[in-house]
Image (cartoon, rainbow, N blue to C red; front, side):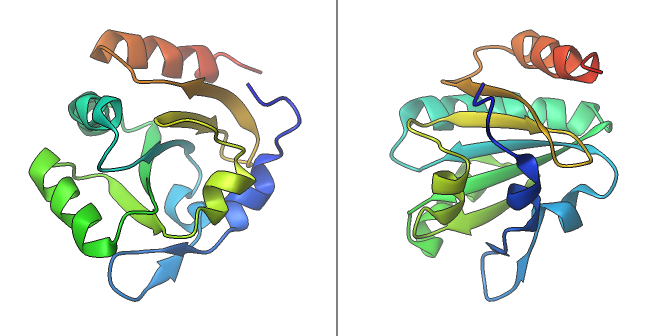
Length: 144
């Protein structure tokens, strides 16, 4: 986990929604833990883990899932989101600003951020099962 990564700036960074609107992770999160998943359409492991993220998104209301598409054109990212049938919110990071702030170096990268903006955990690489993702979330929930 990037120990020096302060989650607060991530929660305040304006994010581009498909279309023309923008919002911040804090607005999406409310008072819940946020799971941020950085992905791209060309990243096979990213695409492979999307159904896992979607399943946990549908069954665990303690957390908010946010996908962050890295540098794909909006229409291509939208097509991938439709193809993988994700229903959790996702945003565009066309210049990689949020990825740079989060210090991501590979895709997929998933961050767990507390409701008060602190990074609790980071995972580089794909989740391979629902139970793996559920255990990862539970470990973050147990963090004081």
